Length: 271
Ligand SMILES: [Fe+2]
Ligand SMILES: [Fe+2]
Image (tube, rainbow, N blue to C red):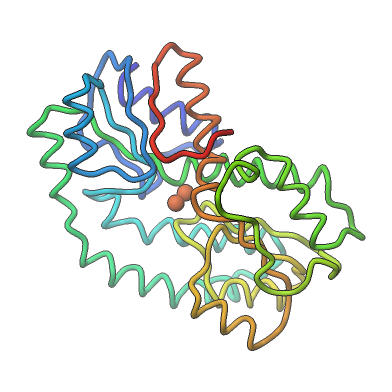
């Protein structure tokens, strides 16, 4: 396979038409038969891959180039997810705007060239696939919840449904009900994931104000959680970063292997 075919495969599995702004091929390559796949990759992983005879390094998180500089654009995917859940579009835009602006300012700080130049020097095919793999994970969680959670289900039943995924059983992190209680009615459940990063305080608060009973994030900052707790409204389930990333990564690696590519997994929870 070549690097284009690999990224196209991820789009196909995610049901996306275009490569999102947070994913990129930094160094293209052909005839890739042996891949080192890491959630995070940089200079050391590239060097290790070269020494051990890999044909490519694929990371999940953005590392360089436009994928880190334009990363904030994928945060706007929260808007469509909110609209799909019944939030009026202008409310959704408002909820996204503050963190979107913060992410844009932070993007300026990134050393976007370092690892990419290193990959070029080593002639090591190098890419990252972020949103497509998170979208695969989001869809898996949504279908599980749709199949198992009914109108009168409690929050703990949402957690039990998710625990059917081996990734959550094998992870060192636990799925936590960070806001609300297990015995609360779950109400409408939204899997808020595959939009760059978690929606923080504003997005969860906006969901709760528009008829959503339970929001699922893969992670949240302590400061945002404190603000949500101070308001005491809604239920927030936090599923754990690496376990949740693995949920989207594993089906993709499985497909690569089906196509004859050998993949070494680094830091991915077993599915
Ligand atoms: Fe992710
Ligand atoms: Fe992640």
